Length: 118
Image (cartoon, rainbow, N blue to C red; front, side, top):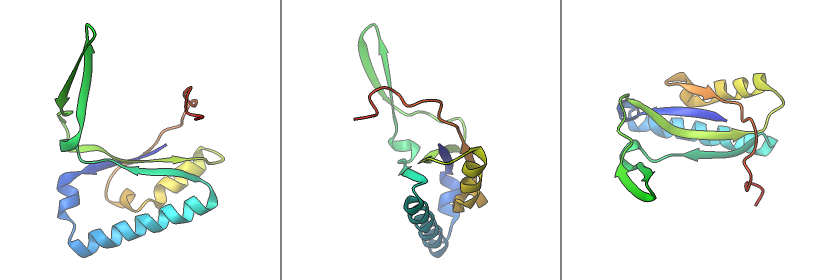
């Protein structure tokens, strides 16, 4: 799994033309690696303002706004890739356009959870 961290302050600092160019580059990356079969899916998250936290205590569900971040960065997007080895995942992560302005992490998936084969 490749994770891209977002930063609202950073995103809003891009001039409109630069933002359009970055999104076009990201779309090209997605198309290229979808065609090779290495990109299984690419998912962008809403910003943290739209996130909700669910807690269940004593059988009662409570939904609150949040999470309330104590950092400027948040989980903005994630990619599920199927590659030969860790080095290939790192190579793909380095090609993600946003890696040049923010953090991109690579996390190995240990196993597929039951029920995902639907």
